[in-house]
Amino acid sequence: MYQFIPTFLISFILISPSFAQKKSMDPDELFDLLKAKDSLVFNIAFNNCDTALFRILLSEDLEFYHDQSGFSDSKEMFIQSFPNLCQMNYKPIRVLADNSLQVFPLHNNDRLYGAIQTGIHEFYGMIEGKPRYLTSTAKFTHVWILEKGDWKLKRILSYDHMTPVK
Image (cartoon, rainbow, N blue to C red):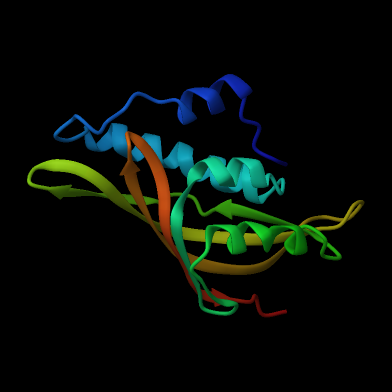
């Protein structure tokens, strides 16, 4: 049910080599790296309410735009909102929609400084002893920035939320 990510893989992704000195990255390498970062953000941090991992992955000047719950311009406010999400009457789970992820590199004077990541995610509810059920789907856009050689999630847009018709 949950996607298992071995601890050694998490460490590898978090301590990946610095790309700050590279002019660019192979597009497939960049896609794979940011897909792995997306997995850490959602499969570990969001799905398991791991705020410690959020602290590592998020930029200090994070901005979060949500079409239903508004705007947050504070990393700390964003992180502090997660215990509320994790204490709902069901367990929320985010799943990346198959084949929806796209990554677009950002360059300045031929140097890679970040990337835009877009996709579609599905949110499910889980109640012990019952099958999981779809609560909504949405589009997302993330801006990842290289900060001192580390990839940090700097801007999050979550929009076009749709609730399934029952």
